[in-house]
Image 1 (cartoon, rainbow, N blue to C red):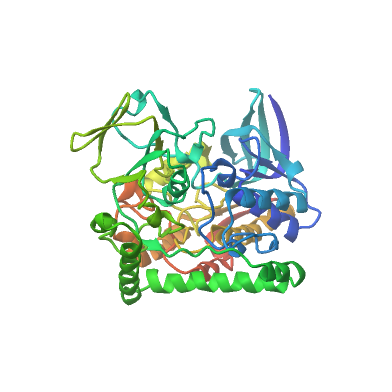
Image 2: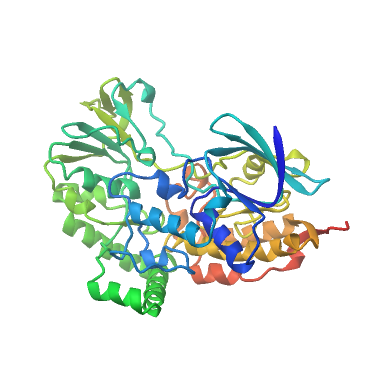
Length: 495
């Protein structure tokens, strides 16, 4: 087993990892002592892995890209998966990042060596070759939607037809003329179902458990004039981004911040759903919980697709899966050729074995605090020089995750800078600072819409809200803009 040294080791070449690398390139020109480890054969993370029909951004694309590199090439307000993947590929070329990435290489463990003040990171490539890297700083950008969550249904492994999660789409399966079951009623299902229904020979039954609140269709193509302006007058791209940012903030103030706006939105969304969906589904499609408690679904033709003759919704609940189909809780057996769970991701579980001071496993720390817990969503006490992008309570429910990860990157680099300069050996956030931060979050959370329902934002669907930030994007930036040295235990190089 070979061993090498580096200053910064980044786990993941998805959006978070590339965002951090771009931050390094921009803030520290000429700095090249960093490595990115990616288990997949190419970059892109969720935008590489999710290739289901209709996959696209829900956030307007000018605000769903890196602030330092706004592209004039978008064909519409919301990017499709191939376009988005291409954008991040171009960004790695622009900042000469690809040569720093080791593809087909998975991190198998990361352990803090407190004597040497380095992380020891074990990796294994696709040929089975093992390698160890010693790094002063470890950045986890493995993603919070890393592990597809299969439904816990009896008989799941007995089905003899084709089965694949929407997050691992199997393009070798031809759905023409097939009887297809889609399990789930979230954002992915709302994008893929209308696309599948375009083939009238594909018969689809969607198994739903809990309804969702919808946003109206915000997508529209850019005109030739708009695209001309984006290309030749670059400031127009920035104006578009700023406008989209504030529209997203307006959505927060309407839906997430108060009872009056939430009530008005509830009435609007109820009218919107009933105006577009078949009447026979009206009573089933209107949620009983407050808008914003679960992810708002952008209607990109989904509600209208429910009128198609080859589409049926089933709200009976699934009792079991058998060799040739699904048995509902009413006892009906429905035969299928293909089953597609679109049931989200295991967001509460950290995907890697990471050990900090005294060998403490990161997942054990999370479990002891009732679920994922961090300081400003970025640092965990007892894990020096570890920075997590997309960490606990950094999602907002209404804005761009790329914006929040840029904010996290800027925060982390303030602390990493003295380590890069050789003045500081380690930085560890204190328990007191972490507890105070999370008490502040949970106090705001108590009066928020996020407590009103069962959702993947919460541990075990009903426990602590671990995923979302209870505030606007502006508030997130404001709270993250400065570093208070009193929140950290800093060890100088000289001890």
